[in-house]
Length: 193
Image (tube, rainbow, N blue to C red):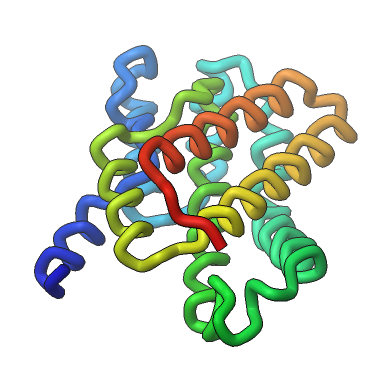
């Protein structure tokens, strides 16, 4: 694959599809799109507006956003502890730049999951964008077993955090959103560590 093709895939790679979900009011889709385009968490006003519409507990979203970096770091620690071969020479997360790209992707998947929970829409991905993500991952030989383990770990950590605060509806939505993301990510994926 040539660098122009890779650049095109990078531009097309899009996880979040909530901005195209016409079930969500247009103003809220715009808010999600602005946050997603800038790869940011939802601002407090966005959280309040989206949660007011969806019936989601805004404190659950705030808690997840505040814990996002910690959740990704916990995921990283658990994945490396359980699968140290991933970061060794020849492993799917070696060299370090490759591992850092994986953790950035985990943070971005978590960010989109948080948007999904806020809007109570677990089917949160963009079909064409995920097609480009899969093609890019295939080209870059992303270790899909490792990525799936990371997403499963993030899912469990989010669910545990939300369950601990009695946000069961939100925990269920997070679980469904992560499962949906993994299904979309693995549609045609045949890579493994």
